[in-house]
Length: 261
Image 1 (tube, helix red, strand yellow):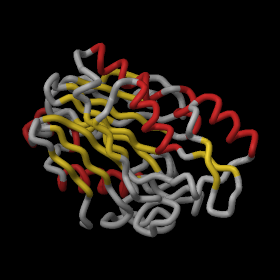
Image 2 (cartoon, rainbow, N blue to C red):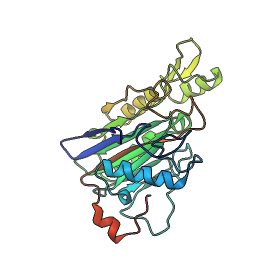
Image 3 (cartoon, rainbow, N blue to C red):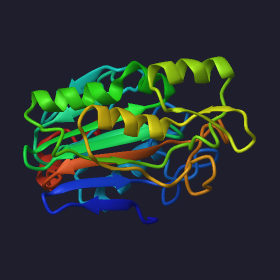
Image 4 (cartoon, rainbow, N blue to C red):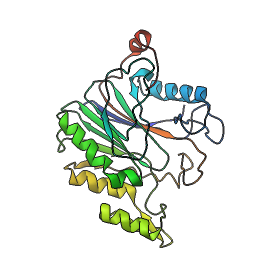
C-alpha cells in the first residue's frame, strides 16, 4: 500500500487523502480506485476501500460515503446505517459521532475536510465548480454550527485538486463563477479563461468565519500519482477522510453487517 497523506491534530482530529497507487483495480482505474460509480469491478473497489480504511486505523464500517451530484445538499451522518441502506445523495455531510469517518470522492474537484476538535464535530464537502457556485462549502459549515461547532475553531484542509492554471473553461463560465464567488476567476498558463476552485473554497471558508485553512499544493491534472478526470475521463476516484477519535474498532465489523457506507 502506497503512503496516504495524513494529518492528526493535538485535539484528536484526523485528515487523510489517498493517491492513485496501492490498490488492486485494473486500468484505466489502476490501482487504488475508491469510486463505486465509475465502471470499475465492484469487488476491486471493495478491496481498495477496506485497504485504505485499515491503513488509517479505521474499521471499513466506520466510513460514511455519499452519492455525490454536484449540489449543495448536506446530511448528518449517523453511527451506523440500516442494513442495506444506500449512501445519501448529497455533496456535504457532518457528524458529531466519535470515530465516524466522513469520506469524499474526487478526481479534480476539491475535497474539503473540516473539524472542530473542541466540539467534536467534523464535516466533509465535495466542491466541484457547480458545488462551489451552489454554496456547498458554506452550507457544510452552517450544518456544523448547528451541531455546536464554532467557525473560529474549525480546522479546514483541502486535498489534491485541479489548479486554476489547469482548469480552462469558456469565458462565459468564468464570468458566471466570478459573479458567484468573486476572486475565483483566473487564467491558465496560456492566458485562457479559467476557474480556481481551491481559491474559491478558501474565499468561502473565510467568509464563513473559518481561518484555520490549509490548501493542498497538489494539482491532480499535473500529478501522475493522482486520478484526474481532466487528464483522462475514464479514471478512478481518490478519497479524503476526516474523523475525530478512534475509528470504531474491529468489534464494530463483527457485530454489524460490515458494509462500507
